[in-house]
Image (cartoon, rainbow, N blue to C red):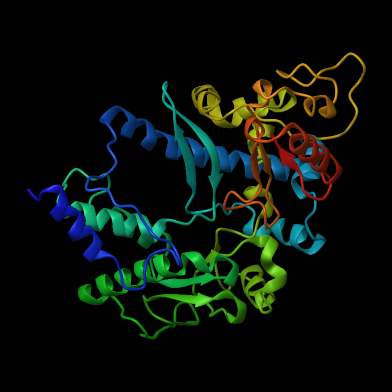
Length: 384
């Protein structure tokens, strides 16, 4: 058994020379984070619950488009998005497509955990794979074992593919290069394709570029027929990706698969607010089933959309007991134990950029942020 100081040396020496996240340094632990068997079982069950939840989100949006669910669902989810992107997201060719990798951000509590948000364009895939390999060298109890994350990502791109990363997401390029290199090495050793191999698939009628994985810049990416694209760029950033129309066109024509799919509505944080809305309660209960509905109520924090639409004189905003959001601007510091978040389609919608904790803000700044959220709601919705 390695002593702790030796473990730290092993971990430090195992770091790829290119790093894992660009321009990031790390504090090291000699031990993997402990997760007991009961909590592990809960997390494993959570994975399927959240898959069913995302499937229901996709269904709710489409039913709203068809007029079979409230029209305000689509109005909220499409707010601030270009018409052509909305149109693309509704194409029948990708109607049932869902993200193949999601990452719920969990906050541990005294009673268990709560979900801060669900990310369907998540960083950390390669990092987690590296952590698994590194810590498995001296801890055989690591969840997923040495190759769990590699196996998982291999199943997302089982015949290889292009991991397409924008400049805006370049922080994550090193970790994805690490995982692509490991998958290429593994398949080359097994004799299943190799980096740069090209095979002709007559039955498919296309040229198959082989079972290889590569990381490529989004800005000048040209799709290859039959090749799956793992999208590592945000949809609000499309204007900075000059050739993205080629990728969208190939996807629309069925020549390539893109995952996560081009569905900006699925990447909104406001889904947590929609989950708690009373008019949608029966939809969620029906689509999730009673068991999953109750379980998700335990871990999805109660959330609100800061919609400035006036309420009838007899109505209040649930749980806050206020008649208008500007009353929330007057909350005391004690009552401001609330989190403001930009919902999604914005440069502020990822990486904690658009988040503010009310209790940490001076009163004037809290008021300013509430007012800004109300003024910008139609173009950039905010949740609480």
